[in-house]
Image (cartoon, rainbow, N blue to C red):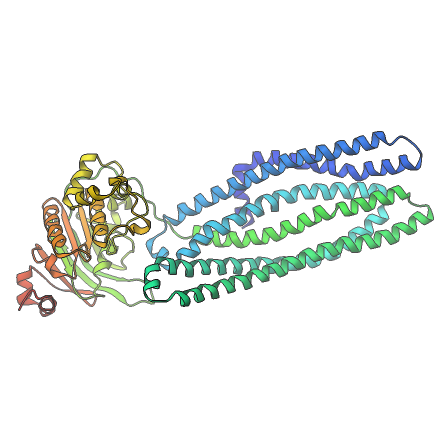
Length: 568
């Protein structure tokens, strides 16, 4: 895991080297101050001129401040670059994950990994690891100068620091464990809040604000408690560091005072040694903080790697697809969403010839939407064969397969942005004429004429400024602009009034004359003119035929039609 942390530094090693060198120069200037102070004290005791030592001390202060500031800026700049790179890689991985993995994860927790966990990387990689390198230099330099002044006092100092350092070492693993739990708690809080925000209108309409506030509040309390554990162990490590220096000071003062009294040590040397001792506070504190940040970074890296280790999809840019419609064949397909989940498809088999309109009907839970999920390869079937255009679906390059399909989901999602951006989302290079034709076919031209900025009007978060029927028609127009060889429509008319439903039925019939259309319908009125209707029930196919044929042949279809007043 430490190797993976260092891999984030590698692209920035040159700037980090420059920043580190500036930090070392600043540290060297700082190390000279106690020694120059000794010369000032010696000059004062000998009635000699103090101008030279004072000028040198002033120059050391100014040089150290300026150089250190430059080094700190480079470190912070590099830190931002590290965070940017980590976020890009993590987002790239997230958006290439399989749908099955994303369904299992929680959006709020994923956002926490992109924001909070990557921010922790900046602290550990710049302030932690790189900053600790400068602190090691300062520590070694101070120890060398302290050894030159008095080896006995140095031995006393090191004994105290080593004892306290051993205690700090025992604390570090607990900090890492507590930090991982804290980040997981923050992710859980984000997931709970995301759930409430995604269902904001439902929460309002249900009068559930207080209940949801309580649920999010409980998650926030758990995050607070985990954060307090981190704060407690971190504070203990900080106190141990402070105690090490204070106890060392008392021991040095006692032993050093005795050595001054015996004449074995000059007063100025004792003063300089004590100054170096206090000078050790910063580098020792930095090393302890760096160790704490390393534990936090390892916890963050663990959460990031959990996402990066998930298998991703490889979707190449597909070549220009043929305009010829394709057929679909399911043969003894078996599928379940997990090993511990019940079968959704149990030997499903049906055929859709190229071109024309085919409908999937049946009660809820029959496995109709799963047919579309398998065709898009959002999930992989466990047994059986699925072919598209005569080719096994697993032999299609994923990008080419999805490039041949147009998919309109049941809830017809519309993204935040303008109407134009939504329409061109799946076909960025569509011409103005193609766009105009899609608007006309889906009866959206009247909507565009009413909008204040036409196609460049913002539609709001999740298309909230559009009606349900308008969102459905936008999703259909978006799919048509893709020029699919197979168009998948999942409940495409569920939110349309009778007039718009009739118009859309005409559009679907027109499109079916050019390509293959496979539609899922609960409202049978939209598919009575279909070339063939596949009746699904309990994870299987029970009948295939036209509307008239199924009325006479299949009891379930006749019952569905009767409940919708399509038969008497």
